Each structure stands twice: as structure tokens, then as C-alpha cells.
Length: 73
Image (cartoon, rainbow, N blue to C red; front, side):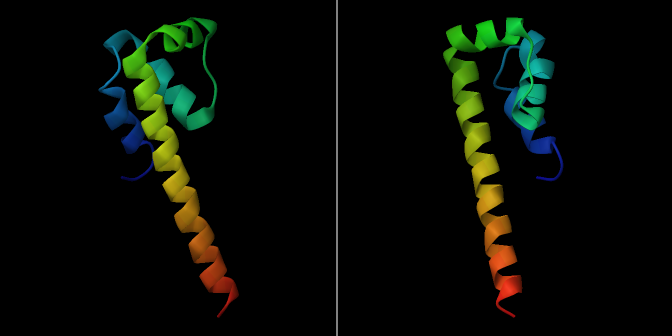
């Protein structure tokens, strides 16, 4: 998925009133104290954040592989 579409898709797993803050958290690393409190107590939100971390991690791994391949040309 391109841009932040992956975050929007994951946000569907989070309560509607928390979706904007969720997207801000997983894309920019910023959140309100209210969202942080919600995250501490909501297993569904925690699982969605974990999934976001995995997606971001895979993206960084692909970038590293691409950069390494370019360096070896």
C-alpha cells in the first residue's frame, strides 16, 4: 500500500473515535495523552500498533536491501 493507506486500513481495527490519533501515532510517532491512555488499556489497539510496527519494519528492510544492492552495482 502506498503512502499512509496501510495506516488507514489498520485503523479500521481501532475504535472509530481513536482512528485519527492511531494514524498519527503509527505514521508520525506522535499522540495525545488521551490516546496513550487508551493504548495502555485496549488490546485491539495494541495489536494494531504491533502490526503497524511490523509493516514499517518490513518497509525499512526492503529499503536497506535496495540501498545495499545499489551500492554493490
